[in-house]
Amino acid sequence: MIDDNGVSDGGKIVKGRIIAPGIGLGYVHLEAPFVTSSPPAIAAASVDSEKKRFETAVALARKHLEKHVREFHAPEEVDIKKIVSFHLLMLEDRHLLRSITERIESRLLPAERAIEEEFSVISETLGSERDGYLQARVEDLRDICLLLQKALFAGPEAFDPVVKNRDESPVFISDHLRPSAVIRARKAGAAAFVTSSRAFSSHGAILLRSCGIPSLGGMPVEELALVEGMPILVNAIRGHIRLEPSLEARKTAIRLARELETMSTSPPASPLPAVTSEGREVNLWANIDHPSQVPLCFHHRLAGIGLFRTEFLVLEHGRVPDEEEQHAIYKEVIEKLDGRPLVLRTFDLGGDKVPRELHLGRRTNPALGVRGVRRHLYRCPEELAIQLRAILRAALGADVAVLIPMVTHAGDLSEVLEILDGVRRKLIEEQIPFNDGVRIGAMVEIPSAALEIDNILALVDFVSIGTNDLLQYLTASDRDNPEVIHYQKIAGSGFGPLLRLIMRHARSLGRERDVFVCGELASDPDGAAFVVREGVTSLSVSPSCATAVRQNLGS
Picture 1 (cartoon, rainbow, N blue to C red):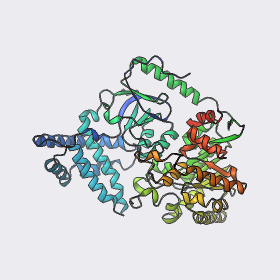
Picture 2 (cartoon, rainbow, N blue to C red; picture 1 turned 120 degrees about the vertical axis):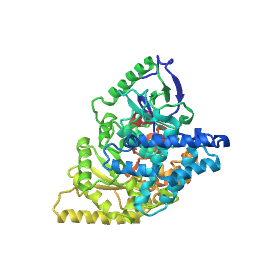
Picture 3 (tube, helix red, strand yellow; picture 1 turned 135 degrees about the vertical axis):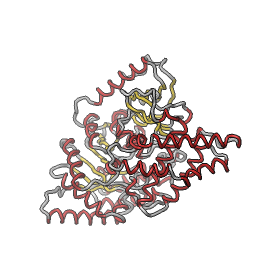
């Protein structure tokens, strides 16, 4: 049995909320500085010393620029030199540096806040432009801003930590929960992820669970005396971190981590459905976003992959893979599944999931704009055609389905089916073998789609209810904004009546078994119990949550 015995004397303990379970032992890596710890203003007598502090930080940032860029960006990026050159130009821009200095002088701002304000103004200007190159520079600007603030807060130690144990992995400490930060953590082989964010249904949180990176949220990271390279232990089983853990605490953590690893790598077993106290079987499927996660389907005894979020392939590479690259990826997943079904969702890009190279215009409410299937239909239908070609070819002889995200009404599906028919005809003309029996599904995550469920079911083989976005749109509360997250609950949101409407219409058509739930609500034991009581018989969950869901449904 995994417990926490014998480590009570092992360093300061701080509690948080579990995002993804596990044990992580490593050293602190500050993903971003926490500017809230700086004062709102400085005394007039401190202006000269603050300006000097800013100048010192700029010099330090220039000196360590290339090292920072290589750590912040993917090590394999081919344009590292271009990124460094752009950053260097900004750090040598006299107009920019003078503007920041003037903010310190005229408004008595500490250097951290002067930098933040100046870069926010520039980013706002570039972000409103339609030119893709200029929009892509916004991420670079944020990077430079973080670099300067990091130099201000931690000094030389930020770039050459003396405490770091090179035999251990980084534990990412972040004040936000963006997918880009999680992807960087995964590429860096992070031992764990700790954030102050409470956006537990955000895409970043979903990605952490999917990656299996032990992670905690709602942590008071701004208040902790965290230093780059400091030893840290993340216990995402009990829900706390230990700063500078003792040798005994570290030994116990290693033992617990090995126990968990043994449990997760036990021999694959046949699928195990959840069984309710009334004796009803509920099929459990896996949510994944990378081929490396396929083994989790077996280890947690899941029926198959109910949701492969293919857009994370785009985010990780910074570009859309071509047809042959996609074909190889999907083929790899299919072969690893060894006959178990696979549901591939087409690229759901937009909102907070946009790589730098694919900005399509900034809007006030990106979650309500051109994302999901809208992006494909209105901006790049050829991209959808290429993805469908790759899927149909890879699916030859396999049980594969395609899931269309962000469907607003049946008209969206009609257009997608036209593109699919064109893809099939083209493959036949080219005499390329493909699977003509691939099933088609629709995400129900917009209220209008739920209200038109009869027309949608008439066009597809199944529907999958995306509870994260459905709750967001029902309650007009941004899923990435911790201040309004509390609205996204079953009670009082209208979700219950809408789910009952969907199931009632599905039953009238004899299609109740064609309704899946794939949002994070399905991974929550209580949320899973609720949707099952309403008649849902298939849940797609984060693999690490499968055991808890089974246990709760059987109680």
